Length: 185
Image (cartoon, rainbow, N blue to C red; front, side):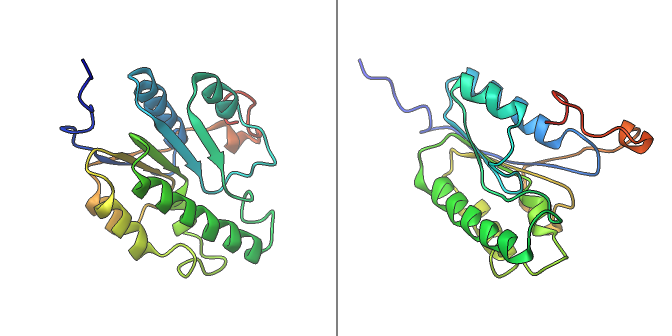
């Protein structure tokens, strides 16, 4: 006997992990692992991280069968504004297609809030906040959509079903310790 589609009666939620503390992406990755363990199809799209670097989460998640794609070109100071704008334009097009395509149970838009908050160069014409809000509203009803990154826009917070703010209390960066292998990347 054929099993009914588990999506039929499931309500998807919009979850936001924001704030200045460490752990926003880590929370989303933990959610992705949990969802994958329950048989959900999970896609993680990273808006800032570049495919030129290898991150520990990619190694682990690929072993678990979770698809993760780095769509950015790195931190804003590593490339020209036009390189970043081009990457954001393509990342946004990919995100819209994947969310609306109906193939996924969970989609994580990692660091999209950071991208929306860029002030060093214009981004609204390549990653329009209005379109992000529309995507949240128009996503398939069963899809869990996760948005991470600092400085989440108030309009995104308003639409979200869950918002967690990660607060920095203490961090070894302030003591001059660079990113730690296996902890930050």
